[in-house]
Length: 329
Image 1 (cartoon, one colour):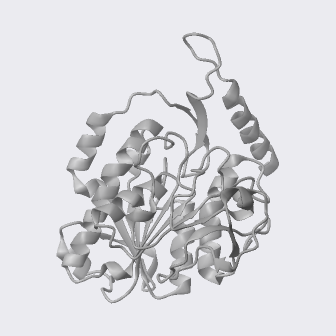
Image 2 (tube, one colour; image 1 turned 135 degrees about the vertical axis):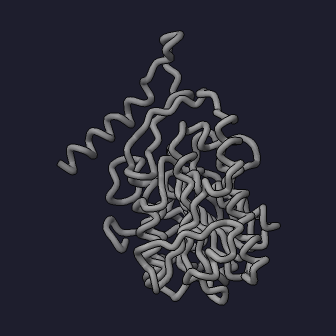
């Protein structure tokens, strides 16, 4: 059954390039494409010219409570405590510890706070260290059309940044903040970092989304935090290809991850590699002289860890690590 499902998804992905414009009848692969939902990896047909629902985005962002902040700690590793932006009592009466590192997780399109990405990363960070993990649930907006969700990441990200600023006002520190985002969430955390004045200690973007992000300057960038790391796993289709962080990692060259048959699998490998590296800190990548060198597996530079939970990472450059097919890779 598993192989049948994979084959079906592969056929659907290939069919995307053959979709015809409903008006002219001609092929328009730049307008139509398939993109996986972050909740279950189901492929959804996207019309790149679908009008953005700006009215909905504005309405959504008028109420800060539309963004959920779910706290997990070693005292409550599986049942979240909900923090309310602006309600200090919700923080003071929770297990949040102002003296500890806090990891913020942001899902992508069609995702939600309890999806696989968040479950894996919450478990990994709590196993690695006694930290606070706060999951940003922006599922109501993330489950709209792709163009609307993509356009909404800026405001949602700013809302997350304002939440971090509020915690700092209560006694927290930017030096203990690690923002982690997957797919659309990889660009969302960009806006969160910028909202703090780029003061957050570390940002990790996990295969930030590629479709409709090739223009403009609103994608993840190294100026968004004190240290910005990007892990690229599907540069062929779903992920952002160009180097854009202090450190850009291209495991296996950045596409066609071992053990994957389809792009959605390679895309998801980004958070799977991250979770594994947080637990074991074993994915050491060699520095590359260029992106071309990374894609050709010709990197001879000194090794540096990809991912992990170290807030004090500082090294910049382009890196490649070759992984295994199966966990822990």
